[in-house]
Length: 190
Figure 1 (cartoon, helix red, strand yellow):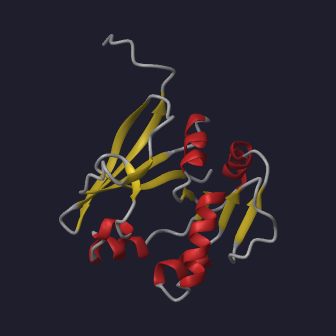
Figure 2 (cartoon, helix red, strand yellow; figure 1 turned 120 degrees about the horizontal axis):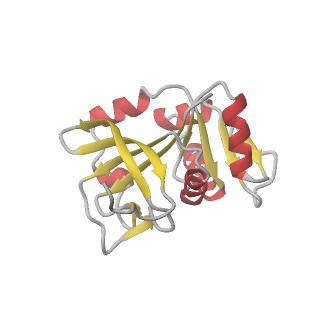
C-alpha cells in the first residue's frame, strides 16, 4: 500500500505564506533546493486553489526545473469547481469525495502520494486516518503581522512521533513525523 505524506513548508509561527515576502521567505538555499529536486517519484495531491496557483506558476515558468519536474509527474486535483479537461499536463480531476478517492488510491496506486499545500484537503485526509507521514520544513522567520494560510487551524488533536529530521543550509529544519489523531486530549495518566 503506498504511503501518503502531508508535506508543508512553514514559518516558525505556523504560516504557509506571508504577504509581501518572496517564495520560501527568500531563504531557500542550495542544499534545500537540491533536496527538493531529488525527491522520490510520487503522485501529488492538491485541491482547487493549489491547482490554480501551481498550474499558473508552471505555465509562466515551464523551464524552471522544479516546475518542469512537477509538470511531468502525476497529479490529482480534487475539486467540484474545476472542469475537465485540466490544462496542466499529467493532472487527473476528481470531483467526488476526496477522502473516499484517496482511500481507494491507497489500495490501488503504485506510487507514494504527497500533498502540496491544500490545507483543507490535508486536514480532511488526516482526520480520516489516511496520512502515514507528516513532514514540515520550518523556515526561521516569524510572520505574525503578514502571515497568511495558518496551517493548523481546524486540526484535531494529534500526537507526532519524530522519525526523521535534517537541517538544510544551516537554517531550515525538516521534521518528519508519524501522526496519531486523538479523540481529545490525553487523559494525563501515565
